[in-house]
Length: 378
Image (cartoon, rainbow, N blue to C red; front, side):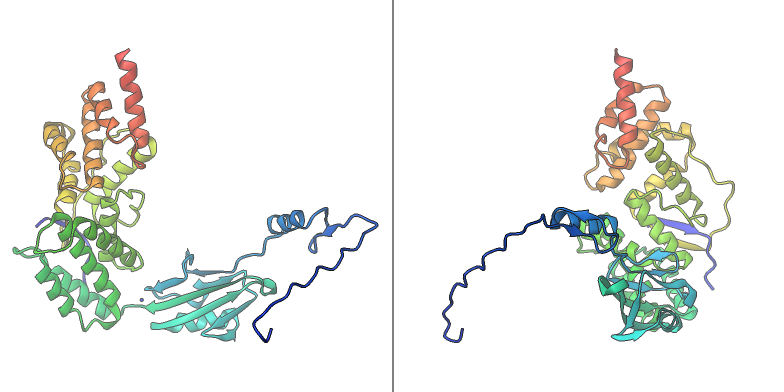
C-alpha cells in the first residue's frame, strides 16, 4: 500500500361550455405609438426594443451572499470553518429573510456567525423586490477535539495490512463520537473508497467509474475543510483529475507540489521544463494512502532526468494500460513525450503527442510537438 507522507502535526362557465368573445376594434391612432424607458427616458418605437434596452442598459442587480472570500453561487452551501459576522455579507440586497423572518443584513450575519451547527434558509431580495435569491445554509463546524480524533483514526490506516473495505468501516465506526466532524469523516471515507475502486483492490465492489465519483465527492467536501489533512487529500484528488492549478497550500507535501507545478507549467506554456526539486525534506509524521497509478507517477517525477529516461519503455507501457484511468494515461504520455524531446527525438515526441492532441489540458503541448515534428520531416 503506497502512502504519501506530509508534515502536519496532529495534536449537509358554469355548465362547462365556452364561448368566443369578439375582439374590440382597435382604435385608429393619429400619431405613432412610442415606448419610453422608465429609468432613463429614452424613446423606442416598439415594446420589444424597449424591453431589450431595459435589461441590457439597466439590469436589476442580482442579490448575492458572500461568505469569507467565497461568493455563494449554489442554492445549498455548507459552512465548515468559523466566520466572523464581518465575513458574512449580503450584496445588492435591499431586504433579507432568515427562516422566513425579515431581518437586517447585520442581524443575519451575526446569527449565522455565532452558530457552530444548524440549518438556515436565507432569502435575499433585490431593490424594488424584482429579484430574490434563496439559499439553504448548513453550518457544520468541527470542534478541534473531534477533528483531531478523526485524524488520529485516519493515521491508524497506515499499517502493514493496508487499506481495505473492512479497515474503512473500522475508521467510520471509530469516529462516530466525532459528532461535529462527520463531514470530515465522510470526505475521507469517500477518498478511501475511491482509491480502492480505482485500483480494484481491498475487497471493493465499486467499479472504477464509481470510484471516480467517490473521489470527486471527497474533493468537494474536503475543499471546504480548513485542516492540513483535508488540504492534502483534496490536492491528491486534484492531481488525479489533472486539475494542476490547485497547488496552493501544498507546501506540506513537496513531492506532490513539485509534480503539480511541473504539469501545470506544461499545461499553460506548452513547454517542458525541469522538475523543480524541493530544497529539503522534514521527517514526516503523517501519511495519506495513494492509489497505485498516482504513487507510480509521483515516483517518476521524483527521479533525476537520466534515470527517468531509462524508464521510457515502462512509462510507455503504462500510457497504454487499460486498468489505468484516462487521466493517468495522459500524464504518462506527457512524460514520455517530454523524454523523447529531451533526447532530441522530435519524431517520436510528435507521435506520442498525437495521442493527446485533443486533450483539453495538454493540447497546447501536443500542438507544439506535432508542429515541430512536421517541420523536422520536411
